[in-house]
Image 1 (cartoon, rainbow, N blue to C red):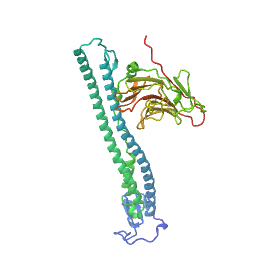
Image 2: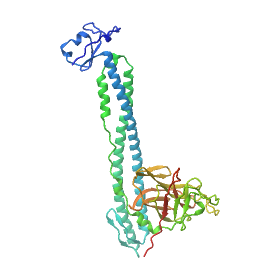
Image 3: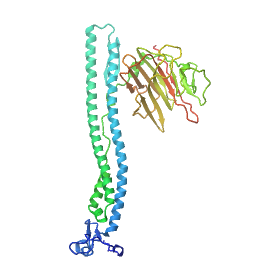
Image 4: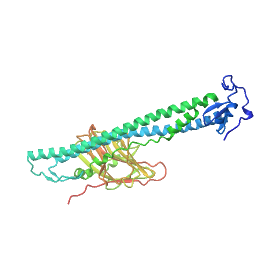
Length: 427
């Protein structure tokens, strides 16, 4: 199929826009061969059945295509930038998760060595059933060496998987960075081409178009990494129940929007603030309350039922009063886990620093573990018996107290509540 020269193409022609062979003006563009033609060239046998446009029309067609694909490339650039940010965040998350699992193994090792009678089940298929009621020094040393060896084997596997995952993520980061460079460069070239004369724009027009389309068709996927949770200890929350404490709530610190139960173990939100006595230790910004108990040493564990809360915070707060008065202040440093319903999903954040935890399922019961001397705070999904997040190597400046919080409603009603679980009584 061919297209003939129309009268609108009769215009002033630059002196160099003439066919060298026929000395005719170059007013036609053969789309099949991607060359500019004069009228006599167009009559040649090789172009007779080709698609031919006027130069101006062809230039306008390619200009529109270039502008359209340039906009699409810019949209893809933002997508790839987001993917790169996600991969970089995953690298940090992988390293954090690996360090958290290592911390859990160190904690487990300490607990198992310190206990006189060890009967823990569930560490990657190993069963520990050792009666050390009256152990000799040799028996204890042998047990410690065997336990350490098994932990080191698992930690080595964790390190190998972590290294493999990190390499995959770095390779993905490199690929995405390279594509970002191309996605930034090509639209600039296309926009520059659109500003050129018609004949200059049509030079290598198809190559520029195909190169851009090829970049658009490249489909980059996030790195496929091994799941480090296969190395994670399960059942730690069960092991920690030996440290479970009966926590009670301190009414003197409760925000006016919180209603405390008579037994001081549950809180719920009310839509109107109560008239409560003024107290320098009362929370006046967040709907929080502290536990009566304060800790300056030792290991402590408590569990909280959060099933009826759509947004909650759990953790510890440093007691800024440090025992100098009967009115502790609620302004001390905090270590927090936040759960929040977002549509059909739950999102979880920890602080400090503020960091997202990649979990999506609602939790019914959360365990909180404090090891004061080792500066460790751990949060557990009690139902699954799995770690949510832990903080290691913290430094406490005095007493710390459990903290519980619900989200103050922004209009409307809110019936959120949470309850502290009582320790299980041994029969």
